[in-house]
Amino acid sequence: MNSPANPASATKVDRSRLIRAAVPALGLFWLVVTTLPFIFVVMTSLKSQQETFSGSVWSLPEKLNFENYLAVLNGGFWTYLRNSVFVLVTSIILILVISSMAAYAFARLRFRLNKPLFGLIVAGMIVPIHITLIPIYLLIRNVGLYDTPFALIGPYVATALPVSIFILTEFMRQIPKELEEAAKLDGCGAFGIFWKVFLPLSGPGLSTVAIYNSIGLWNEFIFAYVLTSNPANRTLPLAIWDFQGQYASNIPAILSVVTLTSLPLIVAYAFGQERIVKGMMAGALKG
Amino acid sequence: MTFQDAQPTAGAAKYRRLTAVLPIAVFLAPAVVFLVVFLLYPLISSFQLSLLDWNGLGSGERFVGLANWTRLAQDTLFWKSLGNNLLLALFSVLIQLPIALVLAVVLDEASKGSRVLKILYFLPLLMSSVALGVVFKNIYDPNFGPINAFLSAVHLDGLVRDWLGDPRYALGSVIAVVCWQNIPFYMVLFLAGLSSFPRELGEAARLDGASESTIFWRIKLPHLQGTVRTGAMLAIVGSLRYFDLIFIMTDGGPEGASELMATYMFRTVFSSFQLGYGSTIASAMFIIVTIVASLTMRVTRRYETEV
Image (cartoon, rainbow over all chains, first blue to last red):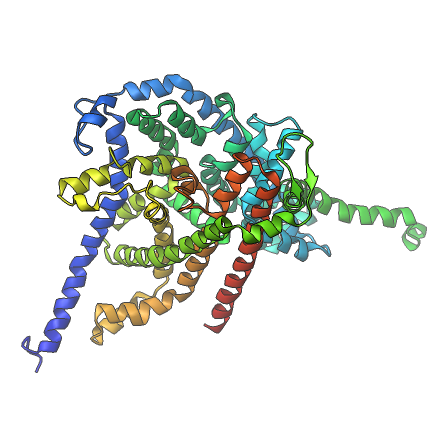
């Protein structure tokens, strides 16, 4: 009865064996699809410009050619990096401070507008930034911040606030009321409770907010493109854009800019994949 | 002492009210200021600007009422770009979600090496859109790009194309890159959904003689229903406001073949200097995104309460 000759069970076994074989095959296939562009970038960036015209695309570089990297590093790369770091650090600090304060108010303080205001801010998450682009461009120009790194901080903080406030409010609602009561008995007011109880206990929430926004802002393009124009005031994503104009047909040079600008995040990722993946997912799902 | 307790003065009551309101005001003020200045005011201002004819430079603005809006209604390029946004949404759902689902199942099944694979799969999400746009512009390059080089090498010269330069293929080529970048996001999303799947359920079904495909279709997929819907919603809303990669790779071209609402708006403002009309496109986009977002949210919520 249960012999392998039974045609039905034989095909069943075949099929599940097929599926079992397909699993690693599919896994490897997507690995190739994902990594080939990266391999192409690194390989080509190490070639000489001549090689990209004459040689085959997939041949290894004749010799490792770091000239392109040196040209980029000596060509203003550090200025872009400095601007990026400045804008990112300032924005993230502001985002953390402002959103944790608001989140505390929404999670714990009682006032009539609590719910409607929170709902309004959360609704801000679906606003496409493109509708704010023109008025913000005019505003920044009128207040004289156009073409300075400072121009980016306002829009960056504001676009990050809705999702950050949402994540932190949810987080702070979970903090047990008893801890707060204890602090109240010790004579703490709202500020004391926020500073001594809520901030220290919100570590994981704050790190999610910081990670999610850091990756988004580090790669942000459209505001940076519109609100700055001089390479001295631009951030790293614009480095690729500017170099592309400058090196029009020098493919290896352009791709070495790509490699160098992407490196900081990839290095950070190498050290904390789990947290970065989790932070990005949490942020995007709330958004 | 007793006298004071019995008759609190008006000043004390005011003071008490102030101490109750003050913390709320202080905690919320910074957030409200940033949101009003950089989100609410621009939103309103955009609608106001949509009533102007203005190049954005001098003081030559002219109030034209709803003229921009009637122009928008008859603007074939706008409707084409909206159509492209919808195509992007459709293909994002039809391509990204199934591939992501398969990959999530693969990673879930393959215990060995799945961690390393997951880490590598996630890499595209860390790249800036400028970096990816520039990279894929080179990859699609008709003369020096690896895709055409590969096709010639395997004697499929008939498939060699000007991927981004030919209006027939531009949109498809760009959508492929958008999918390539975003698939890992949905993969991780589904992986999280699968991790809450009780393993015993699969084991029990296997013992009962259910095949792998039955287990997938009848047990795992229904389990993921909510997650799939969330993913579809994110893909649709994200597609309607998409900008970056397409702006960098084709800028909506050639001949508007890959034009999106956001790229059209951007060019109208920052290349043709029609601030008023650009604001009209931006405002229309806002209306469309808001309607679609609230509709899809309502649909997903209704299903969630049903399940």
